[in-house]
Image (cartoon, rainbow, N blue to C red; front, top):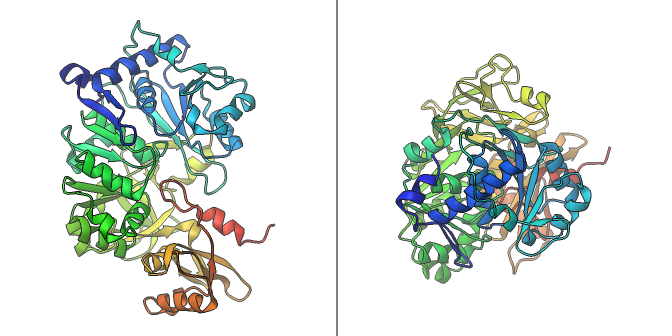
Length: 508
């Protein structure tokens, strides 16, 4: 499904509204502009399976280029414009992008790329003029003939690069006329429709904001995109646009809960019928606070950019299965040990999803692709997360395997400690990592960011350690606490834990 049909039946309906500027793009305009860009790509010689890259902030042009790629049988790669120029250049080169479309608002990296990748000749920019780029308007000048007969395009998005260079996640292109599994989930699992008004507060270059926003447009829904997340502005957008559905990450919940009660209560959020959350495990205390505030309308899912499978859980289920990420909605879950043996319920292990066929591969990396497959089942895949199933088939996430702390031969999962400290009255943010220990191998360290009005001290560090000891087994409590100005997080709230770990590891 695509938004093309709504250009005929509801051409004046807004397909997109930018929350800050109020700029609107109708379905009729989106159809016309995306068709023109698709024609331009065809004239540039792009063939089915070629790659178009986007280097941009949250802007309407993202959707024009996305739908142009989808109707042209192309892969589209969105690149995080906050990466270093060398990292962006690597992704563009590794993806084999034939065309780059950039926003002049994406900072100096846009200018740098022209010099770093002179061989990428098809460079276009919208916004202000940038040396080395042609104006995006030239793509819009291509009116006819319109591209037809191509299979649907697909996304090739890149991992965050927490373990070395980022890798392109290449999803399989669908055959013409085939049902889109993601679209089936949006409609049949979540029950979303073209009558919904969907708010996207996160950077569009990430997988979930991109796929869900475009998935809602494919249903004929209006998508409201925030230029950037701000806690109070999010509440204002919900009220101003009568938002019915939004998707957030737990860090956004925390930021909104930290607003003064008077600010939170000043905005009417009663139009919301569903709040979807994913991207990172939500501390139970945070989720309980959100349900108490907004009602039992939170729906959580667990998945990954790889699209290997997913789980879903409603608020009512979660209140019965506190801390669970839900039951399988796409694929069948298997929990396996390091040798690939299936484990019984209640036992921690690597999470695999079984599908009819493996739905992704890592671009230019057959070894990483092979490592993501089960040793005995080619159609079982994993992204390295650890968890367990209960007797009713509900999944509980433990942590990333690479973040597990082994202290004195005992496994300690940082997420469990982070959940305890998430709503500590003195803390804005927290990360728990393992650091080298001569006796135990590793010891637990908490790295914390304090709220305004609190000062680092040995006494406060001991109080934080005691806070955990009062709530968890003593061996799980931090042995030490470090105070920092700010923890390294992505714009979607994901902790860049690998970066933090490296700061505490001796250089080899």
